[in-house]
Image (cartoon, rainbow, N blue to C red):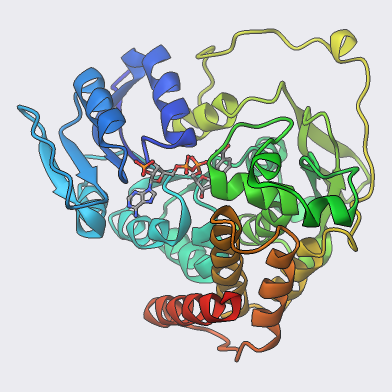
Length: 377
Ligand SMILES: NC(=O)c1ccc[n+]([C@@H]2O[C@H](COP(=O)([O-])OP(=O)(O)OC[C@H]3O[C@@H](n4cnc5c(N)ncnc54)[C@H](OP(=O)(O)O)[C@@H]3O)[C@@H](O)[C@H]2O)c1
């Protein structure tokens, strides 16, 4: 079989490095066209020397890298160039934040398959992205474990009654609101199950990550919000489930590991042993717990449902305000609970644009970020 040609946007991040671990195990199945990082040049150089891509892209153009035989690109133009290169069979979009959106669209325009980790892309512009993908015959293969689980369970989308997204509940699941208000950055970053980038880890502590995932699921599977449920499942063994119209429920299970959904997305529709280290044992796991989310303690879930149902620019506002608030929390400027208050306030005052264009989305995003920073001050 011919090698699948792949580029990884965000190869120095949590998803990116795990993707390279998968690719290293499946060396005979992949050829790397491009790798890209933001400011971790040391790691990016190490990866380039090991995996020998044709192109490297560095987010921060002040930092230079010269490796024989590898062309170095810079910034968002560099990401666009990678995504316009039709040599690629698939591009893994694993950068964090809004920078994922433009290159994803570029890859879709060039009819390149997408493995999508960057959920912000769909939260900001799900309608446009999914429509473009459909028009160009491009699959958007989910990397998020919950959406990968749903993707793996779906046989016939028209017969689905409900998507059931699981949530580990994060480090504050059984803690009080006061504990959340007094939480240090270190405590918020101590996720019990997953080791991820800082932004998504804070989102997992506030459960905003689940909120963003609800919006992501709505777009990926074209499912009305009324048919998307969330259940807390602290062990993170059941990665999500679907209920068919006849009441039958199909769930995808596995030990908590991002290697599995990353691998499935980039090798789809094939499955390989890859990085699997341990066999699954029901008797070792022994029990699986489920509970209803506490919507009062974690207002992010309803914020996301409401923003999603309103649609248009409301989810752009949710994404930008939340991200700015998370950055302020990480910088020690606000407490964890204030992320909700700030995001809520920005949503309350947002002037909705029903079907924004991509340029309008970026304008709104910018505007919301400026206003959120002012509010934080
Ligand atoms: N981690 C997970 O388990 C997980 C699970 C599901 C979904 N996701 C989603 O996947 C995406 C990545 O998450 P992550 O946890 O892997 O984040 P991360 O560890 O923070 O990695 C982010 C990546 O994006 C790069 N980057 C950041 N800013 C950039 C810029 N301005 N220009 C170019 N590159 C830039 C970083 O480069 P440097 O590090 O070199 O600066 C890094 O390679 C997010 O959208 C997240 O929601 C993650």
